[in-house]
Length: 193
Image (cartoon, rainbow, N blue to C red; front, side, top):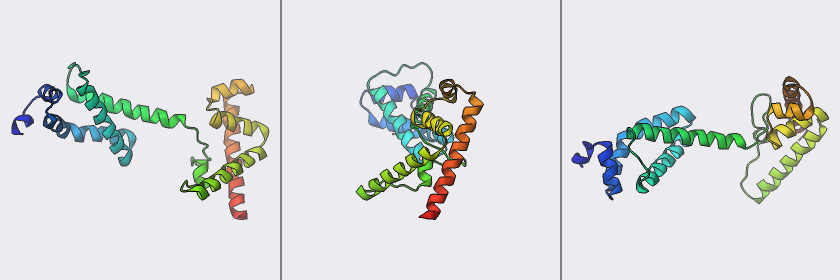
């Protein structure tokens, strides 16, 4: 094991590709702190960082085993690039999933406190979503239209402005007032319950 500690990254990679799993273990221990720190710095969530950290090493293992790794420089910059790309991919995926935000930047379904635990929870969630749809129907048409286009059709404000024949600032204002009105309705509904 002492011999592996002093081996270069290139030698450890070759040894791993030849079947020596201890060589890869040495490589992991050599760079795990730097990789994890860079992921954590990027995502700012330790649980998410742990998941992405594992994904990075799975990708590294697959690449090395399939002998697609080319020694263009050093191992660490290559591994850091993989980590960065996986972090960016994660945020792109999260960004694509639509969510309606309140004026204080909370997810509208978190405000409703909906949890998916069982059939009864699913029924309640369906009823909560139906309440949100009913509240959307109570909004003025111009506010409802902007919210639906933004959060359900996942359109940019520029696209919404073109479709609704208004300026981007007008679309943003209608969105803001629509979310404020939804929040007021939700607060009134919670008091009424």
